[in-house]
Image (cartoon, rainbow, N blue to C red; front, side, top):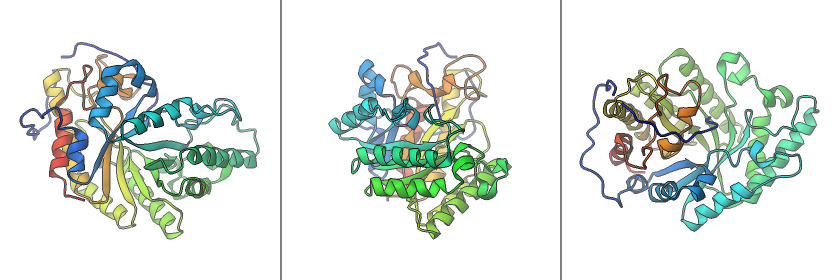
Length: 367
């Protein structure tokens, strides 16, 4: 789950490409956008947005409108941003996003109602569990209710699982579970459904993509989480797979297809909700680095989009100009260069990654 972002423009230089280059084809026409390519297969494409940039950067605003059918607030709808002081919610930025979407015919994914990393400062561990519960349920009712009937999806609970913590069910050792017990997840989904019955309600998490033991444990825990809630009729309608990829990391397409098929068999839908590609382990050459990023994303998307339960793709941002990847430990490059992990470069120009995403849409089976 990304946090703070920066605005950096730097001269970049060269990298070793991964094997299996993507055939990018001729340049796309200006009207041929990612949302167009997705829609032809019954999919959606969207991007996370920073609301302040929509008014301060006309090129950024134009790129979001041109390429996206769906927008997601990077942080403006997280609880800590909405209620910095107890009982004094501030919906100005969230409302501005909703207005922007309505004015431009865009759908909105609400993100995220309950996340252990973004809670208001007034919620401290010395408060009684019932105070925490009342605060959480009031926040969900107030926020989801405010936008009732206007949301495509809500990420209701974000990143509740961490198998390596050793807790039952693979649950994360974090504040909500410690204070309320893991039943808080079910309570949050029921509250969200009551507040906005029309929205699809998602559980959203990361680390599900690769072949190492930790990723495998996260996939098992996630599948069990979804199966359990479906069996008990908790209103989990979708699984959000963040898909923060790492260029150069081994990816097993068949294993990933099996995981998505198992999730689909529960009856929930799937979305890739925060796609981007880290390039920190690649050398600096722009052309080779961009090709390696595009190849990696294309292999991943070809596997993921083969599953018809996958309904769409959201990238976590649209342009490297404002990417969280260049500002976050573990994602930043050691050489200080801007991470080139989003479809458009600093100047809002399409990169090989844009073409890789577009061609993955072209080759996906129709929904």
